[in-house]
Image (tube, rainbow, N blue to C red):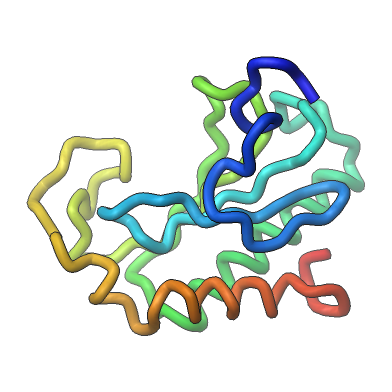
Amino acid sequence: MASGCELCEQDGGILLLQTPQWRVIRALDGDHPAFYRVIWNDHVSEWTDLSASDRAVMMGVVETVESALRAHLKPTKVNLASLGNVVPHLHWHVIARFDWDARWPAPVWAPKQHDVPDAEQRLEMPLAQLDQQVIRALEPGTSGN
């Protein structure tokens, strides 16, 4: 754990599931309500800081979260990104995107194209239920872990 690292000191959002190696959180983003992060628990900043087997574990978790979002929300697209410029802590963004979202078709970090005040209500299921589906997909004995 590194002092001053936001993702070492905090969950980074609504914690859904944590193992000794990784955790999955849902970010609080009103414009993109189905925005999840897969965070490696050890303080590493680059993909190649992980061993090949740890990279496989992490990508398995990313794949599982993406698959759950696709199955339960049927998004127009799922964005995957590992940026970490501001927080030097390895994590992947898994973001369900819709042709109605505030920045579509631009990246989620682009300026808004229009306001979508009811984004969460447009999802095919309530976020609490979606979170449970993501957790269920990640539980031991399922793919991704």
